[in-house]
Amino acid sequence: MHSLPVFLRLTGRPVILTGDGEAADAKRRLLERAGAVIVGEEDKRARIAIVSDGDVATAERLRARGVLVNATDNPDLCDFTLPAIVDRDPVLIAIGTGGASAGLAKALRQRLEALLPARLGELAQALFAARGAIKARWADAGARRRGIDAGLAPGGTIDPLRADAVDALAGWLAADGQVEGSRLVAIALLSGDPDDLTLRAARLLGEADRIYHPASVPAVILDRARADAARIVADVPPDDPCEGLSLWVTLDGSMA
Image 1 (cartoon, one colour):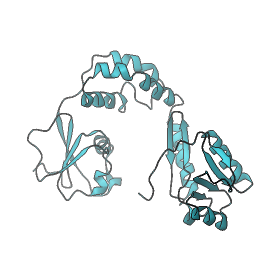
Image 2 (cartoon, one colour):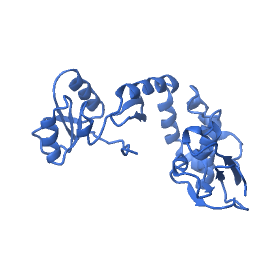
Image 3 (cartoon, rainbow, N blue to C red):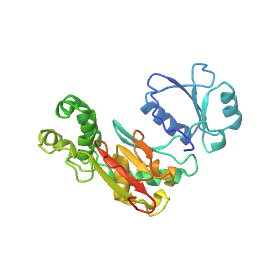
Image 4 (spheres, one colour):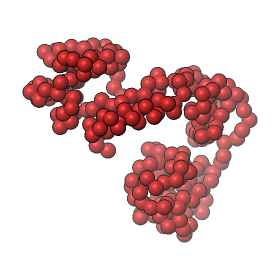
């Protein structure tokens, strides 16, 4: 990754904004939405700055003070970039291109805006409020994660792309469905290019508890898995997979 995506809490914090015109106005609105206190270059408390006119001298002065700078239309002077944002509070989706193309980020945002239901934020809040009930139903952490994954999966009871998912939450919690136990699923990669992953393979990588694979499977494929999924290099698949979902991932599809 060229950058580490983060969500930064700015409520009540000073942020320097320099420059005038439409670009500065747009950045001011964004900072105000995030609750920042907008200050001038002279404010020594600020650790973040947006140079809306991309002025080189201003950006360099601020960086020399240890301030993290975003300089509009000047990616070489940017310590951070501002993504296109899909806002379904408290769900936020940020789309960045590292300054390569604001137009591409905007086009992706517009696609996602059309795709994501307006009530997605309500679903997030309802899941937060239901944490106690969810823990009561699935006391084991692994079973709880698999239960939530099943509910949120495509076609699941609380599939987040369903417009009425939040209305189905109570029924999902009350349902008698059982979470799948231990299973091992083989994935035969079409190539070492993650763009060639099938929808099924991509979904399984995102759900797996552990991934067994020969050393020949490239890291760019394994990077598509959950960050906390165990990666285990092996020449053959396990005889007795551990609890939850295990994958045997190969480039040639063989099980041996």
